[in-house]
Length: 100
Image 1: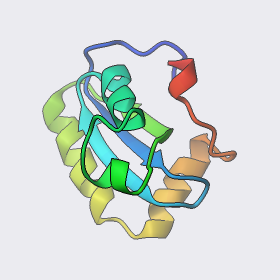
Image 2: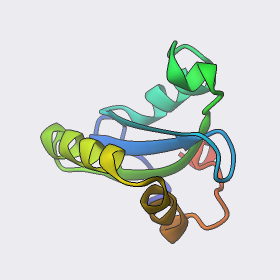
Image 3: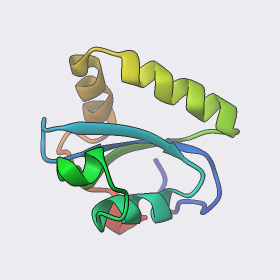
Image 4: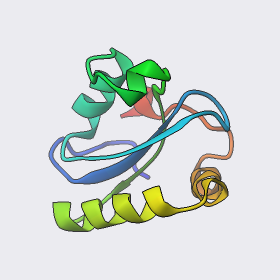
């Protein structure tokens, strides 16, 4: 993961309520804006209901189609596989949003 995120690239991202907490998986072409919407509860639904606001994982894709395919793939995974994916790059479950 990079420290500087391009504004208009396709991303798959995972938000968490806390370490090993509730997870939300999404796809966006504007990561900073979308995570801000989740954090400020502007995205009504799952993330606001369960307070899923910490960006614990993201990956950039070359096109939106590959990002959507990857999002669907991860959503079908067992929970432990999702946790393993997060912990490979973020073992402390840090919130990456402030570093974007």
